Image (cartoon, rainbow, N blue to C red; front, side, top):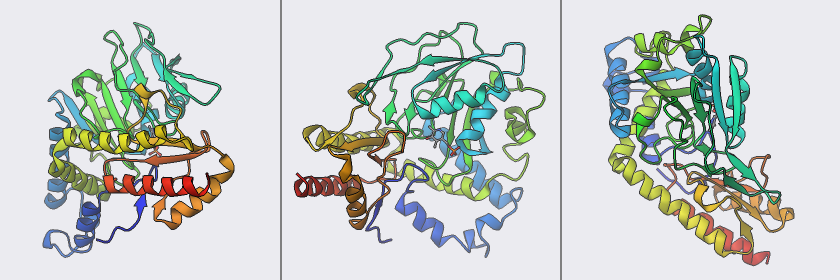
Length: 362
Ligand SMILES: *Cc1c(COP(=O)(O)O)cnc(C)c1O
């Protein structure tokens, strides 16, 4: 497939070119059945095999221990902002602590407040100059039902590589924009969840890993489709799941396996991110103000020395086939998202463009 453009969108994001080509080949005639995979009954044996294979591949990639359920749910990342407190604050303990590191952890906290006694814990220090650095050792309530955090803040470009120390309180992670970009030790988490549209597949789907002891604690008014126990008991088919997204996620999991798994993805992602950060740091035209120990490998925000040039940068980069570089309005400037599917060549093309642009406008 011809790929003369590179899409740096933060989400929905680009998917691997090979995966898109395979999906296209199979689109109207899946496995010789003469119909699309999206036209198959989710309870038929052909689709059940697709679903089971995707789960098996994800378990293998993330080395998910046997005492965790893998759930394929509706509602994306924000659906889980509600599902987590509904499922974990159903008993007498209504306490949960939320580590704040940026926009998405803040939004998760706002949703959770509907369901319990939610405490905010500051996780980053914002400088007046727009800089971000991490709080050294955030403290949590020892009697909280869980601690929630977002290891990669997609908007600010802040990533946490060390786990918050919760002293045994179950840790819940919104990995929407970092899942599958590097290995993680799943056994350190109570719940890992991710909206699919960054590193997994099409939007709408969420993938949830839940430790068994956290099942069966939901508030009685939890909707069935958001109840982890109900979802697990029905193999994520309590209602019709997002079948096409689940299929496409399965293709992405196979692609990651073929690349060498999560260690290989991490090496590639480090190389890509370093290539861009090294160029930005060496330049006096562009800047990134996130402290080096928490710079995101997935989302790289950067500023031009003169914001009056932003519009020209966006127009000319688009012309050069480098799409969706506009930063989120909260931080302004630019943002290049370098998820798994972005090849190193895309980052090199971006840096070459940035060099040309800086020269022209020096
Ligand atoms: C994109 C994103 C979300 C929101 O996902 P939706 O599927 O739009 O609800 C939540 N958390 C993080 C970290 C994200 O990057």
